[in-house]
Length: 103
Image 1 (cartoon, rainbow, N blue to C red):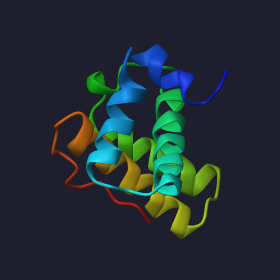
Image 2 (image 1 turned 180 degrees about the horizontal axis):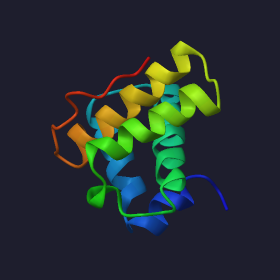
Image 3 (image 1 turned 90 degrees about the vertical axis):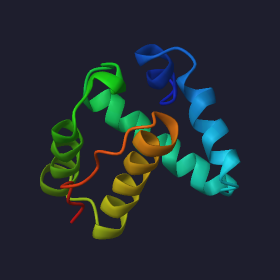
């Protein structure tokens, strides 16, 4: 399975919504790839559950997993946090990212 297929399985049309929001903000191609990567990994981490059904604590759980279990660098952890913040605020229209710690 291609990593972005997870987004489509969790919610049809989600990849086009994400790419549309990225292009609206005029982010470069590399940023698009990075955001899609982290958002897809987040959805896969939560077993393809619809991201709109997940809570801020679920985002923190993913970031904690990346930090403690996967031991990603601080830079990668911050990339993941930025991608999830963008996803929830700019794609899904939710702004409850307060209290989520990246590193």
